[in-house]
Length: 242
Image (tube, rainbow, N blue to C red; front, side, top):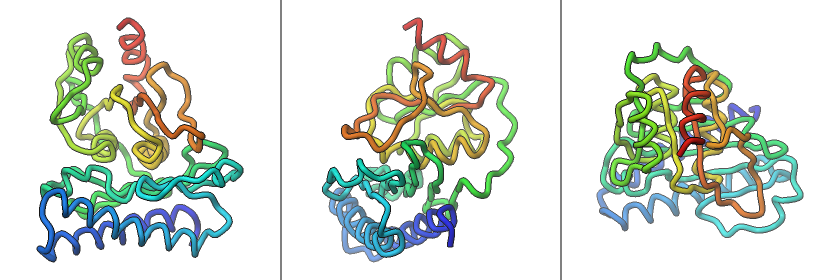
């Protein structure tokens, strides 16, 4: 099983585990989110350490170590991206499994278990045609002021959605044109979505246009832009004006 196949396989099965935890009916709300995070993380971490023992590993739900910094290949995973949405039995949450090589988001998969979908770098699909009015996916509870300002400047429409992975995959799936995030994230929030977006021919960068760089000592990533390539220059210019 090559790296891309492994990423998709693990994301899919972690998603199935998460659905089973939810359907068991033992936990609700925050307790459900915690149980899902812990269970999916154990599966992903044990699988990767067994199948790729020489690679580095960074997971949101595991204690970080400095060992990964000396590795060229590092798996970056988020067992449940959108824990609140998962706990609320929504569908806009995801499982992220990515491999960064030399800091670049090279390979990965994003599972959307609530929709029974896995989007992956080795099976890119044609991105559906864009809408006449650009749609920007934003947080359903706290849309970033920069995204609101850019939307107004380009005559766009805001679409509220849950997790980062769900938002990024909305662009891949043709449900939106732009995902602009300026509220701060971590490497596990965007590595797999960025890898999948790039494999599908989309633009992925920081909001100043610089490339995304992973496996850093500080895993905080302040901002992210994933969009259709025809919108990249305009959105980056509007952000620069703010």
